Amino acid sequence: MRDPANEPEGVGGAREQDEPVPEELADLMTGYIGRAQDGAREAREALDRGDLEGARRYGHRIAGTAGSFGAFGLGALARALEAAVRTGDPVAIAAALTAMDARLVVMAAAL
Image (cartoon, rainbow, N blue to C red; front, side):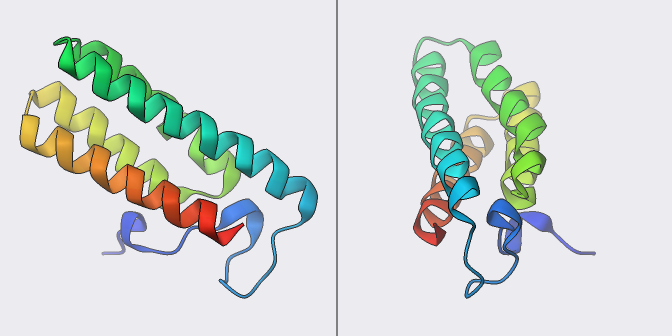
């Protein structure tokens, strides 16, 4: 079974690494990535306060918006974060956030 979290992102519709992202979409993606990175920081702060619901909301928001940008792997990772928060597994939560951070760095570099 294919795991979208392990596949390259389709950043702004550019499915191959050597395929350029149109400038208009690159601007939108840059904003999206920045907001997602800010959200990850806020999710970690929520977890530090014991606010699991705050971290779950971050995962839910990213899961809901990632597909709009062709970021299906990021969306899969965000759903994994939501599931980890629901079970209260701190190791799985940390792993999901770390994987999402790494994915966002890759997405930013692709622009």
